[in-house]
Image (tube, rainbow, N blue to C red; front, side, top):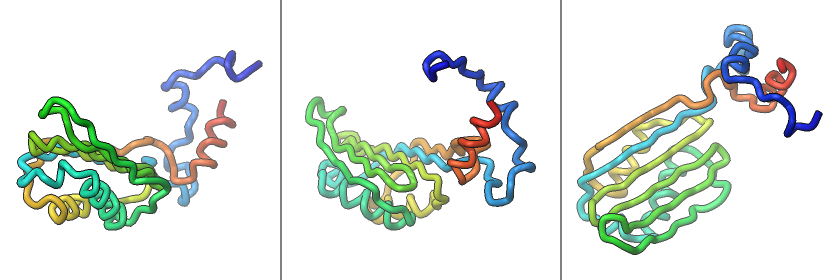
Length: 166
């Protein structure tokens, strides 16, 4: 049977096939794979730094360094011109631990920031870098989610356990 014709188990079947966390070796005892932080920041003054590819690139480099991550590729930064409320600078850096991305809206004095990592990081450290780089601001949205529920830190072992349980 080819991979394309193999029946895919439902999420309930997959969850039922996983051993309980208490049965996993202590080296794999993590209830999640990583942390995902998303922020919407507003009231940034002055918005000039939001309008510069170099400033956004510098912010991403400083952020990654400050939260203890390692750069795999990037940062890649680009500028979108257009209607004032939609134009801005976007950047992404691919990390060994996952990624960080930013989208700025200078005319609105706002930005969106997304940081996901399988390595623990401090949300407060992210805010510290935001304050250092952009000054005062207001948090409009802040979400922190645990991602990869029931994944241990050893992805290869998890993949093997999943395949064996099928």
